[in-house]
Length: 150
Ligand code: SF4
Ligand code: SF4
Image 1 (cartoon, rainbow, N blue to C red):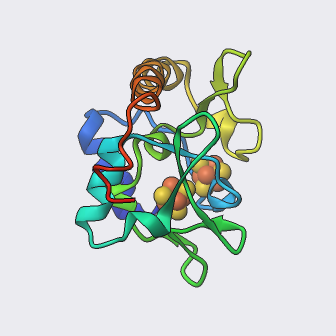
Image 2 (image 1 turned 30 degrees about the vertical axis):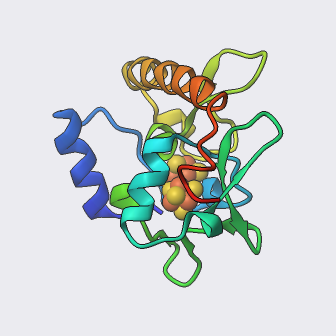
């Protein structure tokens, strides 16, 4: 999922090497439950993907990534990589830092490299995740279906 090129881009974005050591195992792209912001959806649409194929709206009104044969719609099973790495959803950028309802923001147990997430990275991503959750919550109340022509 995370190639060297993408990692370099990420480091550039944040300016320092405060990043987990992702092993590119692809575990987090299997049976994904990743939520998408409206901005994520529009960005992925601009790449030429039809949102009707890659998203669904859950019972709470959140947009989520669609799975295809048990893995994320954008996961390339042959190359074990993300087809939209540079434009992947913000939640995928933030992973393996997650929020589970009723629990605090934390590092996901299923990530085999979770121990490489520093306190500093957890703090920074935790802030990003809090902001994202707020935005997703607001967006779940808005009828974007018409805007997306669904
Ligand atoms: S968008 Fe890319 S990084 Fe995110 S779950 Fe799908 S394949 Fe994985
Ligand atoms: S589960 Fe962890 S180590 Fe595996 S691809 Fe995802 S972030 Fe990287």
